[in-house]
Image (cartoon, rainbow, N blue to C red; front, side):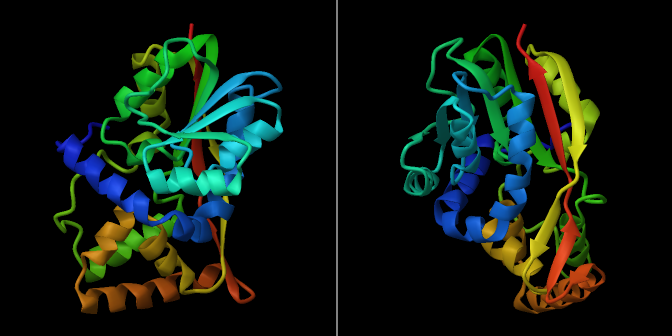
Length: 275
C-alpha cells in the first residue's frame, strides 16, 4: 500500500510534540492493551538470558523491562524526552536513552535482537527505521514489530473513524503521515522486511482485548492518550466532538461487560532475521 505524499519533517515534529505531552495519559489509556503483545514479540526475537536487545520507540519502557526480566541486556530508546523520563522513573535499573528510530545511535552489529512495539505507526520514514534495525543487528539477529490490525478487526479504530466520517471531517490540516494501517497488511510487512534486507519474514495476528472502564472511555482514551488520532479528534468542531462522543458511547454498548467494555483490538506481529 503506497504512502501518500508527506512532509517527513513536519510529521515528525507533530508526533514528537505529541508524545512529549502524553506519557501518563498514554499509560492510563493503552498500557493494559499494548502490553499484551510484549511476550509474543520477545519470543519472536528470541529474547533470552544474555542477548543484546534494543527496544526502539520504547515509550514508558514496558517491553524493555520485560526483556530485562528475561535476562536480556537491554537498551530502550525513544525520541521523546518525556517518554524516556517516564521509562526511567518506572524501571530505574534498565538503560533508557533518547534516540531516533530512523537514525539509531549505535554502530553496525551492536545487537542480537531489535524490537518495536507499535512504534512503526508513528514514524515519518518507516522504511528508514527498518533499514536501521537491520544495520544494528548482528548477522543472524532477529527483528520484530507490532502494529494494529485493519480497522475492520481493531474495532476501536473502526468506531472512531466511522464517527468522524459521519459527524466531522477527516481532512483537518494536521501534518500528513504514512498510512496508519499500511503495515496491517501482512504482504506489506513481508515486502518491507525483505526490501530492508531481512530474510524469512513471518507475520501473524495477535488477538487482543481492550478492557475499558466505561462506555465513555473509548473516546477519552483516543482523545487524551494518542497523538495522530487525538489530533484528528481535537481538530473537529465543538458540535462534532459532542456528536462523536455520543455515538461512540452507543457504539460500544454491544461490547459492554458489567460497567466496563471489552473491545476486540487485534495486532499484527511481523518478524524476520538478518542473514
